Image 1 (cartoon, rainbow, N blue to C red):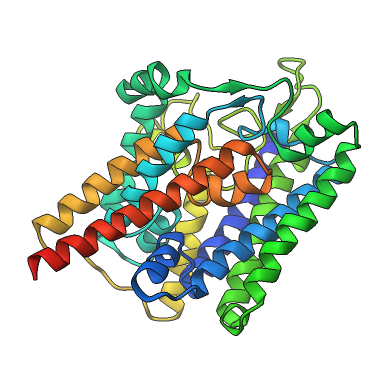
Image 2 (tube, rainbow, N blue to C red; image 1 turned 180 degrees about the vertical axis):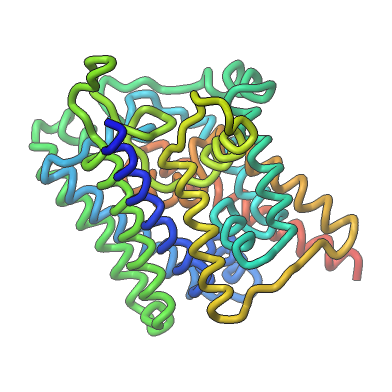
Length: 366
C-alpha cells in the first residue's frame, strides 16, 4: 500500500506541475474569462475554459464506459443533491474570486509567479476553508444550507439517473453523454478563430487531459478493492477516502494543516496536498524560464481588504459548494453531476455580480 500511495502521489504531483505550467503560460483563468466577457465582450478565454470542461467530460465518461471509474465513488456523484449548498456556496465563491483577483488555482499560479498578495490569499483561503470543513463555519454550514437537499434513489450523475429511469445500459449512456455534451463544448470552443489560437488549444486540451489523468491516477491506479487494514474498498492517498481529481479549496486547507502539524505522523501527504504544491512548482518554473517572475504586493488598504474578504468568501464558499472553478467547474462537471451544474452556474453568477458591483463603484466615484 505504501508503494502504491507513493506512485499515486508522484503521478498526481507530475500532472499538477503540468497544470501549473500550462496555466501560467496561457493565462488560463475562469475569473479572467468572465471578466473579459463582462468588461470587453471577449469570449476567447471562456472558450478555453469550456474546451477544458468538454475534454474532461469526454475523458471521464469514456473511462466510465470502459468500467474503469464510477462517478458515484466521487464526492460529486452521490445520491444526495445539496442544491442549496451549491447555490449559496457557489455564489460566495464566485463573488470572492473577483475580489481576490482569481480563484484557488489562479492564486496558486500567482504564488508561483511571485505574487505576495496571492500568498496572503492562499493562507486566508486555507484557514477559512478548514474552518468550514471542521470548525465554526462548518457548524453553520451543516445546520443551515446542508440540511436542504434532495436524496435520490440512485447516484446523481446523468448516466446513472437516465439508466435508472430508462433501463438503458449505463456504460453506453456515459459514452454517449460524454461525447454529446463534452463534444458540444469542444465544438463550440473551436467554432470561432479566437478559440483555435495556440494558447487556447494548449490550455483547453492540456488542462482537460490533466483533469482526466488525475481521475485515472486516483480512481484507477489508486483503487484497491480490499484494503488489507480495513478489508474495504479504498482509494489510496485521498482526503475524502473517495476518488478525486483536481480541486483547490479543501486541498489548500489540508496543505496548511500538513505544514503546521508536520511532526504529527498521522498527517500524511494526499492527492490534494501534492496537487497544490505541484501547481506552484509548475507555475514558478514557467515564470522563471520566461523571466516573468516578479514580486508584487498590495497597492493600499482597500486592495488588501478586498483580497482578504475575497479569500474568506472563497474558503467558506468553496467548501460549502464542494469545489471551485476547477473542483466543480472541471472535475465535478466531468462527472455530469447535478450539483456541479448548480454550483458552476452559481459561481458564474456570483462573479458577474461582483464585476458589476466593481463597475458601479468606479462609475460612482467618477
